[in-house]
Length: 154
Image 1 (cartoon, one colour):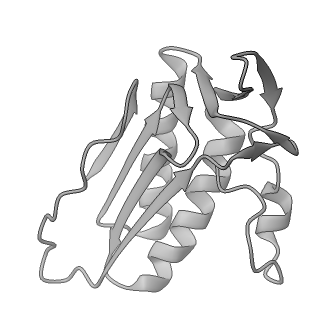
Image 2: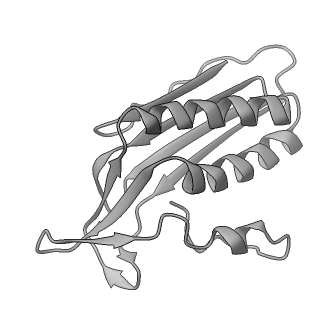
């Protein structure tokens, strides 16, 4: 099952939904807004998107990821508009038979989302002014098996 949605407000509460008898892994990722962007203090990130195309590309990527990694389900909710510091801008929930494919699928999905889905982010300063920020900062480093922490969660 694939579910993708762009949401102009806070993510809904995460509800417990029982898995199937052969579901051994449920992986939940929240990408949160940090207090600095491009080494500048911010109060929020503003997510702008190409309406219609962003939804379509997100759905295609979710389907591709699910098929490639043999997932039971993939849900991605991505916020658009202003997201204050500390709040989650994206939630990815992946279910699979084993944890290995869930972990691999998550790394692939988040990296490709930043590269392929037309969503752009802007840092929001305390005075309300905005500045562009690269959406895929740290993606190359995150691909390395020797890289143990992500410079850019989302």
